[in-house]
Amino acid sequence: MTSANKVIIHDLDFNPQNDKQAEDRCHRVGQTKQVDVYKLISEDTIDQTLLKHQIVKIQLESDLSEGTRTKQFDFKDDMFKHILD
Image (cartoon, rainbow, N blue to C red; front, side, top):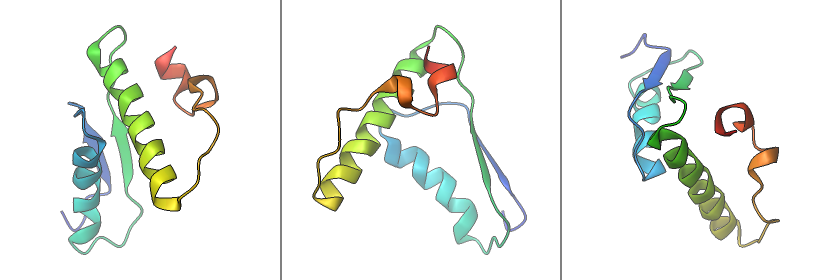
């Protein structure tokens, strides 16, 4: 894993922290290069719904940890728009 610079997540988890932990494993094992993370999402599958839930949960976690409330999350403004539509 010290030379791995790509992470491919093909089975999303409802809990985004589990996927984040998989991404972090490459960084913890002495990785010094930039690590690219790819999430494989098939059209018209449950993975699209799971990704939406993950995005909302990460936004909620961010809002709670910062103690602020941001605007209502809008999937149309999201960087995954081309995947989610």
